[in-house]
Image (tube, rainbow, N blue to C red; front, side, top):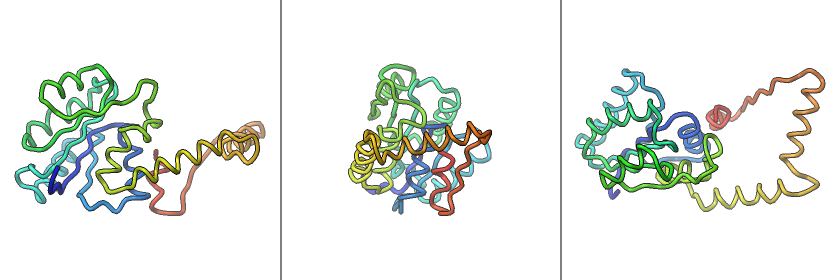
Length: 196
C-alpha cells in the first residue's frame, strides 16, 4: 500500500503475540502499528479513533486479519466492525487453505497469505502470520529467517544444543520439585517476548 501510515492487525493468541513480540524487540516501525486482540468495545473504538486521526479516510491504512481456521468468533466480530468502519482500508487475510475468512477474502478480492498446514498458534511466527506484520513494520525478515536457520542448525547438534540444554534444565528442576518456569526479561523490549 503506497503511502501507508497505519497498520492494524486483527488476531488473537498466537496470531498476535508473535507480531507484538517482534515489533517490541526488533521494530522501529515507521507506521502506526495497532493490534486488536480483544473485543472490548472501548479499546476497539479508541483504536479506530487513533487510526482515524492519522488517516481520516482510512485509505492509507492496511488491515491484516489473521485466523488459521477462519472461524474465530472474536476475529469475525472485530472484522465486522473494522470492515464497516474502515471500508476504504486495504485488507489482507492471513488464513488457512479453507474456511470462512478465506471465503470472505476471495469474495472481496483481498490479498491472501496462507498459514501452512501443521503450523499454528505460537509456532506460526516464522510463517506469514509473523512475517507479514514484521515486514510491514520494517523488520528485516530475511535476517530474521537467517537467524532462525542458525538456531535450527544449532538445535540439531548433539553437543552445545541450546534446546537440549534448556530441556535438561527444565526436567532437572521438575524432578527436584520446582515445576514452575518463569520468564522475566530485564530488557523492556523483550516483555512481549515473555508474553508470547
